[in-house]
Length: 273
Image 1 (cartoon, rainbow, N blue to C red):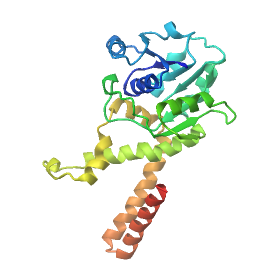
Image 2 (image 1 turned 120 degrees about the vertical axis):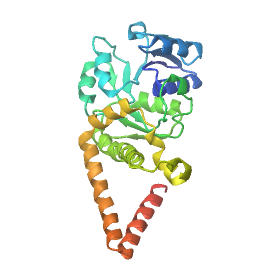
Image 3 (image 1 turned 60 degrees about the vertical axis):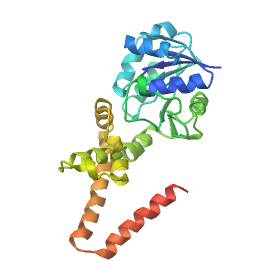
Image 4 (image 1 turned 45 degrees about the horizontal axis):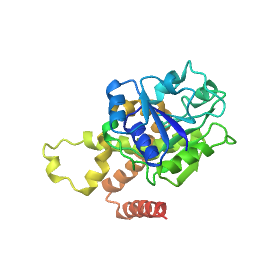
């Protein structure tokens, strides 16, 4: 049985806490909102909670930071961690802070990770114990020879076996395409709608494509800007493909249009194999 401290008891942090409690681990919570602390205690989401990390600083095996990326360095400054302690985060971007934080927490180990899961809501009231079930779980150590065993264990306790260890820089390139660009597309699609009665004509295609437009704007502004170079590259590549599709329509080019559709279909089917 491990002792986990979760710093930031929002949707993600609360869901981690519920998952770890379900797995019979000892879970402490830290949040700067007293109402969140009270809710976590009263609903058995954590074994104990505090407004400050000070209370648990010497009594944890793994510290999980579930705050916005820009806050990660600040919440760790001023603390002295111990050898044997492991610190991680759940942030959707890595390159902007990981090297500095790696040095900041020594002699503790910093092994960053990113469970590819979420909901269109926020706050601990929306946390669920199966949020990470069977999700892709990415571990992004700064150095390839870092010991990631504690984070592998965390991933399994959260309910996934789809664990991959990748370079943090490569992580940010992939996430720009698979997550951030998808959100950009959903936002642009919804904002391009000029019909007053769209909601009366929505089918599965529109519903599925735009689900993630119900977005935590503050968080996603930060994620987009922290990873903007990779995201701009993904947007540029997408615009090129969109232009190719547009050209086939302008030119009534059935053959090339058909080839583009078949190419996409084949690639998507192969992803499921």
